[in-house]
Amino acid sequence: MASSKEYLEFVLDQLSLVEGITARAMMGEYLLYCNEKLFGGIYDDRFLVKPTKSALEKMPEARRELPYDGAKEMLLVEEVDDREFLKELVNSMLSDLE
Image 1 (cartoon, rainbow, N blue to C red):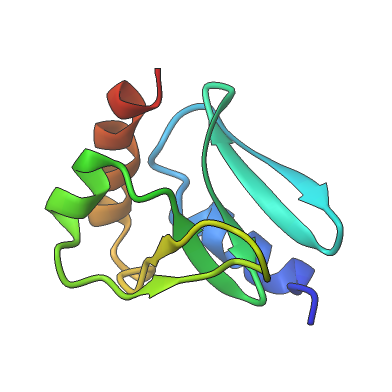
Image 2 (cartoon, helix red, strand yellow):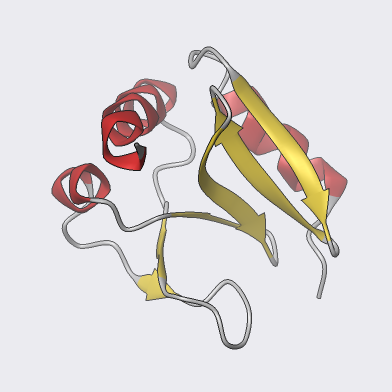
């Protein structure tokens, strides 16, 4: 199942406090970048991020999910309604993505 454009737009709006966010369509899903660093994506209308050290510290109880068959596990972001949390999460992940 592909992700909807509406869910992508919702997540991008929730990430509006973070500078440098862009999205790229990829086979029915969307990859999310911050300052050209890939940090996560929208897969089957789920917002998933890479399991970086900072992401694990911010979301220690996050469910690990596969974005697609054969992929590495990612963390499900359930706090999508909390813009401040999302800003802190993404900004903290940037140094992990060198």
